[in-house]
Image (cartoon, rainbow, N blue to C red; front, side, top):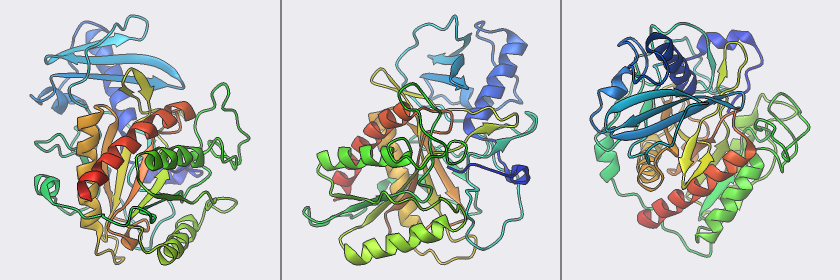
Length: 381
């Protein structure tokens, strides 16, 4: 979601999902040899995954700078690590493997930050803390990265009814982009002029284009959508959440029927040497970016009485993605900050892929996310 311009922000970094997985797999291959079924030593990030009995079959493919480097396959509990050149067809995933590490404690201001402390920062450091403790899997396979001191009963949230019913002829969902200029790795046919690295004012190549696709797909599924295509983070990145929040308030005043707000972003997963990583899923034979749901809270001191309702929506939505399209969801990230989500009880930040993904992979992902989202609203209504 955020492009970090100053190295000082690296001190706030937690270990991101893909970087942790890549490094753990690399270490595993060095210890046991690629393709020999060796398991990483117990100190590495993937150790808790292999102890999970519910992971019967899964595929973790990952890329660096657009090139597939390794593939991990779990088939009936048997782990295989292969280089890209020797990787063969793998079984259809029966579960999504998501691994990360808890963020290191940091002194954070109480004021609402412009950046995003929840994910997608820099990786700098060794493997000693990669134990996966930042995620709490429930019996239903929900993965939550909790950066707060709050505790959750995920099973209770999965059973909590939500009501987003509204007049079918009135707008129900608002889509906008606090960081509207976010863009993806350039691919043939999707070139763009950069306003900053991995950012552009070209709305046909930025996260706004992904929002266009999401709005179109939801409308086709019978969800009445308003899509705000304004740019809020350029030329000044500072104040983008404030400007976006003011816009949300105007829309809610104009359309009281709106009950849900999607702040659509792309993440930024960057190694210490500047390498860009992508998140990668496989749905219906298509490679796509993965979807991360971000939930804000009131822990930083700002009023947010509706955050548990937002959290409930996120948990149920991830469960629906897991059920419909295994490997699409990247999990739920819970932050100390509220990110304008106090304005409705149906507000989420939705991250589609990362800087290493292409626009095409993001558009593929958002197609399937839209189907899961519309399906969830059908249940809630």
